Length: 101
Image 1 (cartoon, rainbow, N blue to C red):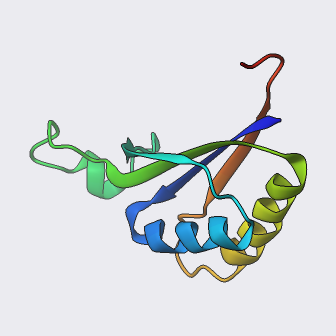
Image 2 (cartoon, rainbow, N blue to C red):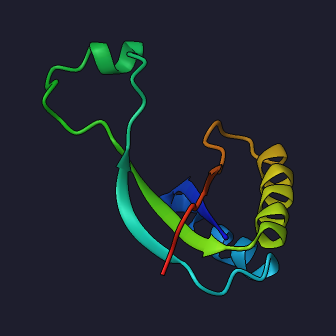
C-alpha cells in the first residue's frame, strides 16, 4: 500500500474525479487548497495592492491504494497533461507507507 497525492487547479476538479474512476480508485479524500507559484511575474510585481491574494483555487486529493491503481493514475495523468493548452498540469506523487493500521 502507498499514499497517492494529487493536486489540480479547481477547473480540473471534475476531470480528476473521472480519472480516479477510470483508474478504479474508489476511496480517496479531497480538500480545497490555495496554490502558489513563487516566480514573480511582471503582473504580480507591478500590483498596486501587493497584499492581495495571488493564489489559484486548487484541490488536493489523496488515497491509500495499491500499485496497479497508482500505475493507472499515472498513465491517465500523463495522457491528460499532454492535451493541456495551459500550464497547469495535474501533479501526482507517491509516498511509500511503512506501517499502517
